[in-house]
Image (tube, rainbow, N blue to C red; front, top):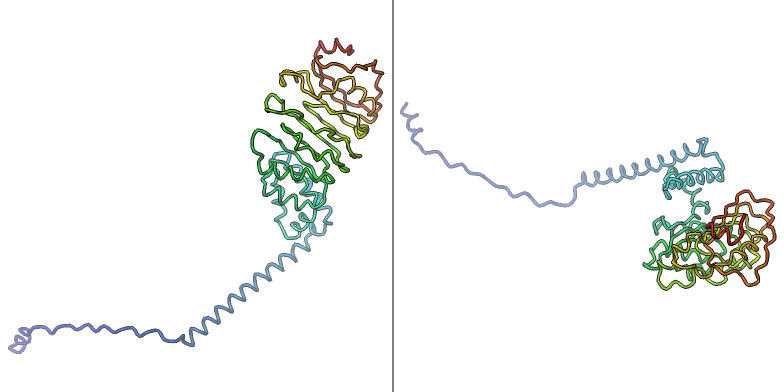
Length: 329
């Protein structure tokens, strides 16, 4: 017991904690090198599997029945889808279908007609790409030009496209300050089939002198069949108008209200009727004439009856006063 008591009275020995420094990392071990080689091999194998999967997907696509359709048929399907979606205001949504497979994308890129319809409602980056992809396909261009404000990037792209007169098929332009913008249309337009020009009243556009350039559509346009003009009527001396099947001219009867005065450059209706008599192929004719403030040609003679054997639609709009003055039955 005495021995136990003696040990109890003895103070405890201090506890020593030994800290050992971790040895510095030495050269890469052989196991680490082997692991790196294995990881690299796995990555290469994984990449090879992905490539095989792509090849298999292409093979599956190629043996599908729809893939056996000729490229021309698939392109026509794209055209139908494009027209359907555009009718609902989705101008670029049709391109989603071209992402289904590589073959469809290549077919779409190799079909210039798919990219040849350009409007200012399409983003500028799209317009630039579409203009390139359209290659030499005939162009259909639609936009509104506001001369008071700076042209939008989209309008700038379309104005450049308008200079390619040898490719123009359809042109639809509205707004003001069109004289300079439509200057290219004085040049030959061998593919031009349809023109729609809607001139903004000069009262809304300062310093507007001539809505359209002198000699507008007076050159070679052998295919021109549709002309729609609102707020302006050109000179019909050019033989290019003799091939028209549709003519729409709207210069009234409310045109004087919008213009505050009779717009300069309006052709007297007597001259318009005589020009119509030289358009035997007309199928549709629509005229909205202004109130009788336009002086008739000094040489105005009695207009002979106009015979239009192919005419199916006729509309003449004017005021009662104008009808009485002109003697329209």
